[in-house]
Image 1 (tube, one colour):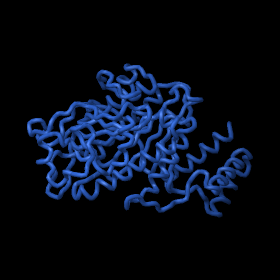
Image 2 (cartoon, helix red, strand yellow):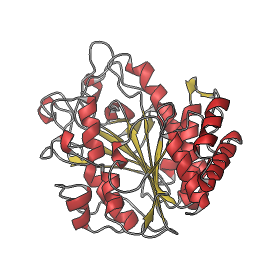
Image 3 (cartoon, one colour):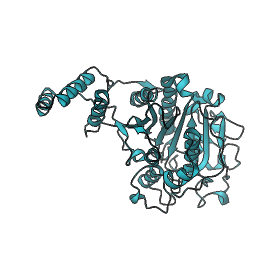
Image 4 (tube, helix red, strand yellow):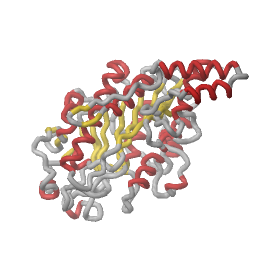
Length: 396
């Protein structure tokens, strides 16, 4: 057994201990077979309001549906859509063609509007024909299962939240950034005694603890605020992912919460957007120009929110929503998708933005462009039941 791989594995195993949080990553041996491209998937838990983030102010019905949420400080994207000011610092990426959006998209999940069920379907990558509770693995893990020659460094899941997206038979590493690997003197003594008669494991364990003491596996917690919003936890997630992606890791996944906006959305949503914006820009900086140029980030949410704001200046669980994409390998500067309109007759169940595309299709097209996967593999194994559309030309 290679000692370096063992120590890394031990660190990841310790990070899975209940007192610790977790990150998910994936990689391949020498860049094969996934090549040199990187994929980062961010799950935005809580149902991001795509109609507020990418505002269709060119639609004649939008202002009447959103009287208190209509934001005059939003930035024009293409003459029809405008970007929420909470993502205003991303406009240079838009201008460089490294930021894009998909509007009026969703998973096949309909009508029940449960966060948990919606997130499960998003991460499982299945349709309504497969009961959510029967999905045994996530679509990113099935991607890994479809390849050969991968190592456990190919993919990482990062953060405290469980990531069904990467759950499954393929080897994936998990990392928990907010907890320490340091052991108490009593626990350290017990550890040494347990492995006393096994020189290999004893020495490896001692070296792992020394790495932890040196801060090699976990950064010390800080308190960093940007725009009045705490971002140090986001930075730990992103910095760890960026460090791995600069090496053999090809896929990283983590989640950001805080997107449920039933009331006071004008005050709450900017906080979540600040964290998302900071994560994207931090990732770009951490990867550096060369690796960023080979990267695509997909930020996905379980469903959208109601077209009409509610009586508490918020929005309720809906259907169609928006997806954010970024990266140097992206053909951005565009809002993708077919716009359905916001007239009452055009809404889903006369209350939600009508989905005109399947979010799985955009993910599948990205995987095909990055890694050259065959359509049959994507439709049959990675996203069972999906019927992919024509190539939208997402990648350079």
